Amino acid sequence: MTTKELLQSVRTITQENIDYIQKSVAKLSENQMNWSPNAGIWSISEILAHMNEYSHYYHPTFKRRIENTRFTSTKEAFISSPLGRSAWKSMKLGRLNNIKRKFKAPKGYNPTVDPTLVKGNETEQFMLLQSEFFEVINLAETVNLRRVKIPISISKIIRLRLGDALLFVTYHNQRHIQQVRNLKERRNFPVK
Image (cartoon, rainbow, N blue to C red; front, side, top):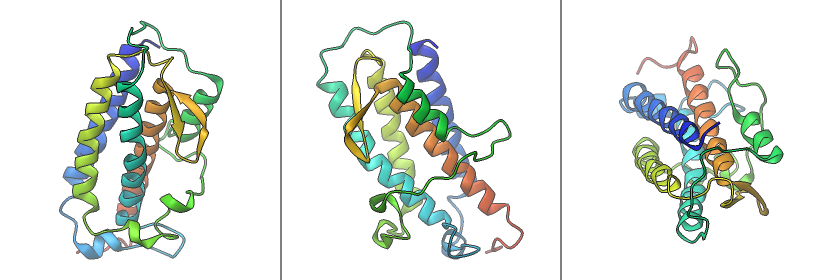
């Protein structure tokens, strides 16, 4: 894929995520935000808190790596590394918007393990962080998406190409927005 196509795809999915949260989640009651059908399933607040925590790691990392790189000449084509492709493909939704593989969230990003991640302002924080992600995408246009490397959140030793990392974070967010949709569509989701 071209660099332009990759960045446009990341922008489009991010905007769809924002639009959905604004339209379908922003006006939910506290009861609806904190509702969970059972102990093994996150509430909407927990899902957003999890995504926000990932953003707190990745956004500054993206910015720092982009601003400090010497690879400022952009390339027309972007080629994923085998590791990068594997990472973002594992996050990507299936053809029917289904979540293909489930993953266990690392401790520092899991609101059931660390309840302090849920602060009560998840929706506002999500909107703010997604606006910040657009800034990251704009900055990414100015560098080589293949040469800039991003350390992943669970291991600073393992690094993905910037293009792969942008896709990973985008598909991760899209996956969790689908999780919110699924939660809201449950029969016993609270009316108020």
